[in-house]
Image (tube, rainbow, N blue to C red; front, top):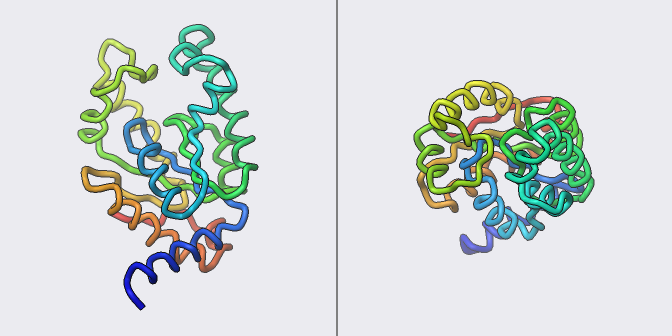
Length: 203
């Protein structure tokens, strides 16, 4: 049996083992949740959903506009509602915003209904990627660099509660996707372990 057939069969087993559970990507802005998520979904033959895009669709405005007009608390409340709805959408790859996993109710819902994957990226990698874009409301401050450092310090201990951690870095996405699938395979072989043991690490 050739390598491509073996890989395809392994991917199919992982997709089937999910049952009704989504794969939920968590982590900082710039970690690659959307770009890697799309390719991961395509490889597994699953739908890809970007929570931020769904929030914008539900609100009828951009996330930046929601922050400007209504403030962060209003955005976070809407974000929690949208993610709760999306988690009932069956097997999919769901990319969440950087602050979504900080909500305790959202974390509990993801733990109950899905499998969480933290795409962990170092500060330097994140800063390089984020500087290319100007649509990050959390970084519209006098010192974006210090803001990013503060957010990392606050959020990383919470992201570490995810079921699986994979190191997002400057390598082809296919390598990171292969590491995600390698980390998922043993957990999905014993579904109960996903709910009782957190924090497999791949780096």
